[in-house]
Image (cartoon, rainbow, N blue to C red; front, top):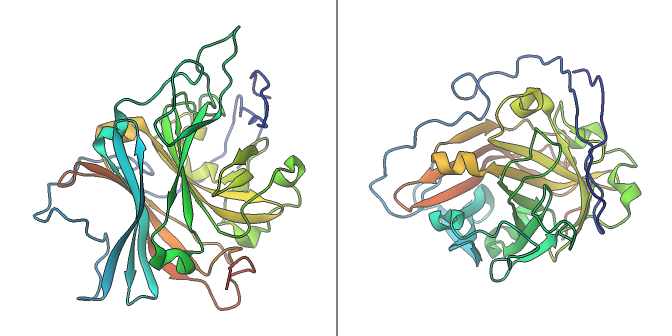
Length: 331
């Protein structure tokens, strides 16, 4: 991959946030990343027929009677609700973790942080509206926090999730500037910080990121919730059609701070959710993790017609070689 030019994003300065660099006039030499669906990574397909059961089932089957489904806390989003969930096998193996959002989350969402209140229980973490420019803008962010199910916290080293709503998307322009939900899966330790220099230095070891991933220049966010502090973002442009002018449907990123990968982040566009299609992505694994030895190898975002709900799932968990799980796990 070749980065021919980086153009600074033109955006009004605002407190508490370091802006992205827009990847202007990107010229990418992209190797074939393989086919996931229909020749396009993460391409949507028609929704699956309704299952006979009305309960949530694991994407990959469990041994009979060995899996438990547990839910974390519930929070409001728009006119709907959402909650974290986890499937754990035999009390010691992660089968799947994710978020279940009923279909009404797409209704009643605030659009303008300067004139509209956030959903009950949420807050506008980033709002650029001023008296001179009261309109909503790219990067405006409403966020709420969900507690994870207790039976998976130690296994995943994740106890809370941040779910953010960005009505105008976020930078880079013409890449991710579309309405979207961002689901953050931060490790309990470390959780980031507020030193903007540590967004990029020291560099995250290549062993903590899958091949092709890079921390994006200017991608640092000053963040402040009970789940997560400031961080930068690492993505793989070769597996991101939107970086080469293609459609933006969804993505899978790593979040980073002070030279460590400190969790994951899933982007889900409202275009994908409204289509009620399915986004599938195989996730390459890092050699080690700063947070846990249990890492997901697949991502699915789907509409579940029998539940009238959207499902964001990390699953097909793998165990990294012993001794490669890093030092972040709390014992």
